[in-house]
Image 1 (cartoon, helix red, strand yellow):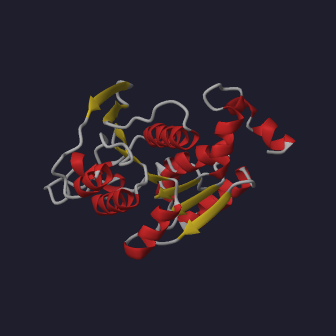
Image 2 (tube, helix red, strand yellow):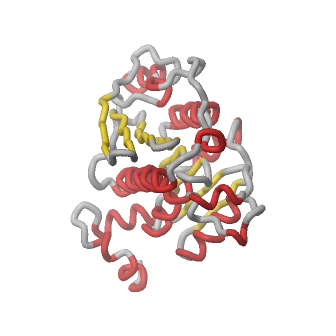
Length: 255
């Protein structure tokens, strides 16, 4: 790092748990953010501020006036622009040292596998179960840590999955694919604006802990937040030994 970088990231470097070595790991890291909306915006902003070297952000939507209540990277002047291009413009202005790759697509199939394989950490900031499960499949297949967040109405949740840890569940262990789960979206149910910032920022914190090796990522727990009362609840979750997504990988890793 040059003198400018040492000064910019000095408050991280002063932390014993991070230091110069941890900040170097952050600088060399590649984060994939799936979704440039309410969760993806604050997550991307803090990862960029922290100096993550390469951020790939994927979304197939455009900026809408209704997004501006909570999606903090977008502006009224960019209504109608692709969300990923709006995000790239904002993030590059905020920290030109960070390389931002904008993928204007809904990640699936080969594109999803390639994006996950290239990343060091994946942040699931999307708003539908089909994409969540697809991202989880890819993260398990490539052994990548996954930081999953969700926010609707006044309720938020956060979970970290890392199949490099044989005790870690995957997303499917908690929310099995194919179960009759009601899909709820901000467009129809509403969302408290700061809630997305709280959960998205927590996702950034977990991702930074993973890539810098500082602290302990929240693997093996589901963190629930009720914005009505500002109350957090942590629930321990276990890996399903019969999980059709992660069980085979775990068995192979132990062999």
